[in-house]
Length: 291
Image 1 (cartoon, rainbow, N blue to C red):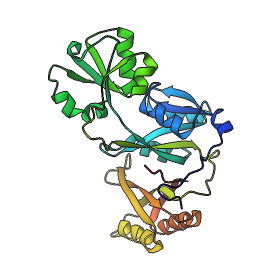
Image 2: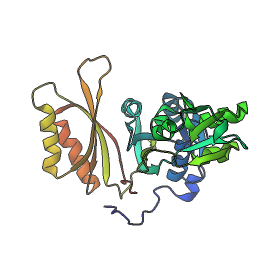
Image 3: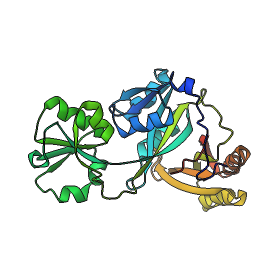
Image 4: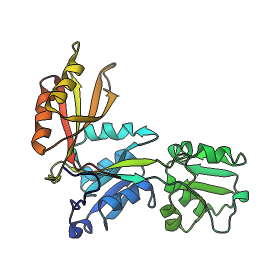
């Protein structure tokens, strides 16, 4: 297993990284852009406006992989991405943790006193409530993307506008950081997956984590029985999430992450779940990210 603090060899070679195209949801300079380059240094970024388009771009071969946020330590899971992982023929190949640092950004020469409107993604605004409450003259307005909000204010050249986004977004679009680190809680991390088409996914011999989607049979105790199978193997369940099955009210898909000692243990977990489930899909085996 990969232990905390241990050196980890990058699963993708440097030469391959520089040839890869990585699809992201959002504009250049976004946190997804930063995570994509952390996962695959030197890759070419393919921005997409919607998450569904990210997966369509990957399926069409216009991108070699996709970098998607799956969970934030403060805001919780990105539910849409669980659904897209289930319905597309893809596999998770890597994960990484990105420290999220929010900054108040404006056009060059603008001061905080000039700002009366602040744009950003709703999640970013929610993570900066204390700062915004301390500046009642700033009206918070939702936007589709953190980096996109910076792009907008630079294009409009409006001195009354500001955005909340990463320092990388300010640098990318030629804006300035007015105040750094304005998030309410510094323990703000987002977990990102690197996703590839299932046919192209590369097995990592150092994988120590597996993500699985499953639906249990419609009978009493079926979920408990399925989870007991994992416990009997000694598999450490680190996350469980439920999502409704579209078109089937009160039926659910469960998503779990498990730490595994070996790839063989991952296969045993899949086999154990299959005895109690109508559907079992492996979403990927990969190395667990560490802070």
